[in-house]
Image (cartoon, rainbow over all chains, first blue to last red; front, side, top):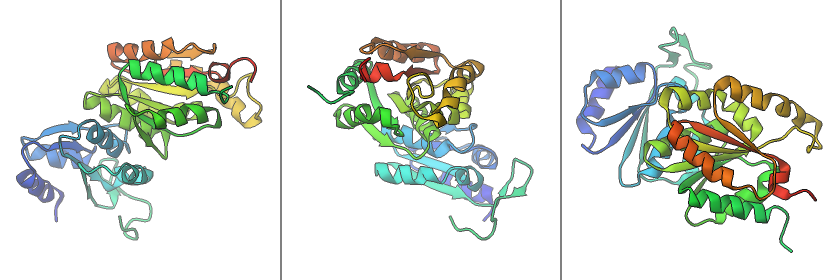
Length: 119
Length: 172
C-alpha cells in the first residue's frame, strides 16, 4: 500500500477528537497531504523522539486518544522507547509505523539490514 | 538517624510538588538512589523509567504539550547524550521542562571514568544556550522550584546540576 493511501485510511477512520503526533519526513508529508481535521502535532526534529513525545502527551492527557504516525527510520533510531512505552502500560496511545526500509527524506538510502528485519 | 541522602531527596521532591511537577522520567546514577526512590514513592508524581535519557526529555516535552509539568532525572552523561533533544525542545519546539542531573566528574568524584563529564557538561550547556544552575549546598532545594518557573517563562528546558554535597551533605 502506498504511504499516502495508508494515511488516507487513517484520516477517514480516526475519531474526531483523536490527537495525532506525526513523525518527521515522508510520514509528515503523507499526513499533511490528507488535510485531515484532527488536532496534529508534527514532532519534526529531533529525529527518533516522536514516540517519546507521544507517550508524554498520552500520559498528560489520559482523556484523549493519542495516535502516533511513525516512520521506520525514526523508530529504528530508538527501539528502546518501545520498552519504555510497554513499561508505562498506557491505554490511550496507538502507534502505526510506515515501513519503506529507507531514509526517504535523507536521500533514499536503505535502513541498516533493510529487507531482513520485521518491526 | 535517616539513611544518607533521604533528607535532601525529601526536600527536592517537596520542591517538585510545590512547583506542580506531576510527571518524572528517570535513568539512574548511584548518587540518585535516594531521590529516585522518593520520587517513586510520591503519590502526586507519575514516575516513568526510561532506557535513554533523551527519551526522558521527549516524554517531558510531550507532557508539556499536554499542559503538565515534568522533570527528567539523570546523570550529567544523560545531559550530554540529550544535547540534540534539549536544543530541539528549547529552540525549535519551545517546550518547557526541568532536568535534574547529578554533576559527576569533579573533585567530589572517586571514579576516573566520570572525570571527562565534569570538564564538558557546562561548556556544552552554554554552547546549546540551555539555561543551567549548579547546586553546591545541601538543603538548597529552592532552586528546583525556581528552575521550573524559569522553564515555563523561558519556554525552554532548564538544567539543574546537583553536586554530591547537595544530595548528601559535607560529611559524605
